[in-house]
Amino acid sequence: MKPTDSPLSSRHGGLLGKLLFFLGIVVVCGAIAWVVLLPSIISTVIRAETGFAVQMEKLSVNPFTASAELRGFVLQNPGGWPAKEFVELRQFTVDAHLFSLLTNRFVADEVVVDVVQVSLAKNQQGVLNVNAFKDGLLGKADTKEQPKSGGSRREFFIKHLVLKFDKLVSADYSGKKPSVKEYNLNIRRDLTDVDSVAKIISPFAGAALGLVTDAVGGLFKGGTDSLNAATGTLKGTASSLQDAGKKTGEMLKVLIPPLDKKKP
Image 1 (cartoon, rainbow, N blue to C red):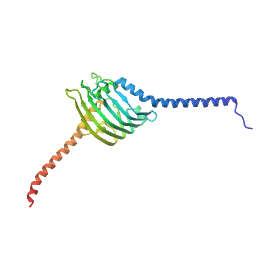
Image 2: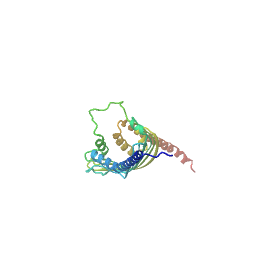
Image 3: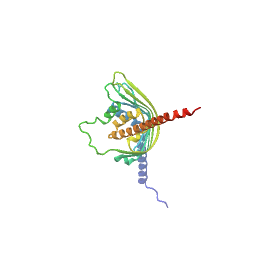
Image 4: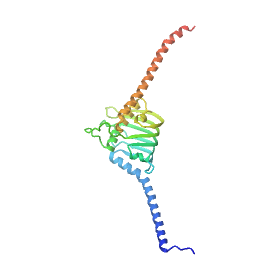
């Protein structure tokens, strides 16, 4: 003869089922609120702190896996700025190691940066928008108290970095006559084992390299030395190629006249 469940155990089972169902509803609602409200919260905070307006089509962040995806991101300069657009991203994704976020060395398996356009602009007061955004978000650096050299520096290691960069714009409105230059970069690079700012800017060349060096150097604390080193290396390589070309041309000039004399 099988024992029958008591009314008390049945009641507890029903309460447990209802509690689990309620917790499931709370988790689902929390996930929906996270997805829906997070872009709005971030946009509001950035605009309140910096004055730069933010638009984004999609933002998803998983704090348990340290992964994030951002699509259709547009950052606009504050009102009254001569140039409207600042940064337009087609896509930004990161797949990081969760525990590395708690250490002084950020580690990611893959990072994808797909840039439509970046406009580096100086307003009439000579303020670069990159510096204005950084100062608004992080606060102005105290020039009286400079950090001591050799202090703890945030390191990073990216196993696979996909970098796409369509256009870079340089606009200077601080003079009597505005100066606007556009650089169609069309960069498509797959970089591996990236552990320095110099490697990030290595795909850039020419005038665009100097602009990116100044801009990124202002954002990365302590990164100026590595940027200048990378700039010097790339410029030195270009200079060596130019010298080799000149020497080759001089040798051809010496050889061509004897060859012409041998012609019938």
